Length: 125
Image 1 (cartoon, rainbow, N blue to C red):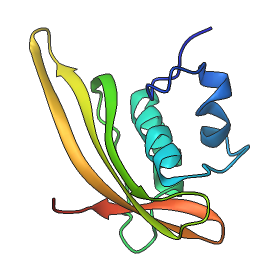
Image 2 (spheres, rainbow, N blue to C red; image 1 turned 135 degrees about the vertical axis):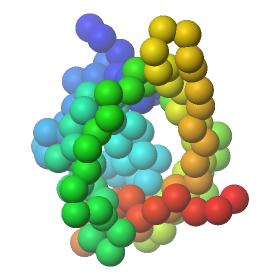
Image 3 (cartoon, rainbow, N blue to C red; image 1 turned 60 degrees about the vertical axis):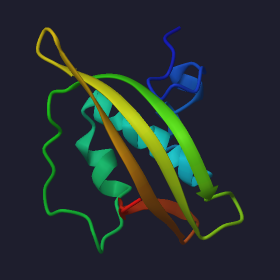
């Protein structure tokens, strides 16, 4: 069974798939961030839009064809099951073309509303 792209080490069906399918809500800000990374890997723009806070969500979203190569969670502040806000700092690795590789570092803010975690925005470090 294939491992989940989010880097948790768990199988996809036991990790992010229930979130992407709407069968469960991510219990923490980190779980939502990981599932959103998985949605980028899988090209699931619908999930990305559904988990984006309405205040900051774009009207449309084109998920670029990017060869995502891995995710590293560097830090998590708050964002637990009992919290209403949280931040997650991560690095996502990618490749474009045959020999070009890169990383994207972001500190993301999340808010929990009506029991659901939502991505708000990237914040300055």
